[in-house]
Image (tube, rainbow, N blue to C red; front, side):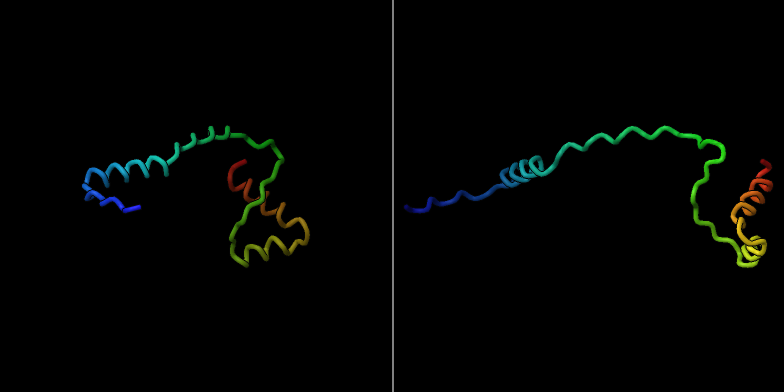
Length: 82
């Protein structure tokens, strides 16, 4: 079987091929999920956080032994006016 001569490619052919390839490769973007409702934590519920404080301040609260995190929380609550 003899190979048929290829016709020269034109800019329109290349553009059409590129557009067709792009359509095949792209998909519809899914809608973003709805935002989560803002929830207010119940009183007394604690959240774990990372907090950087000076070593001398930490040593001050840890001097009293166990419960130093509660003492820091109480001091922060007082500073916040609550």
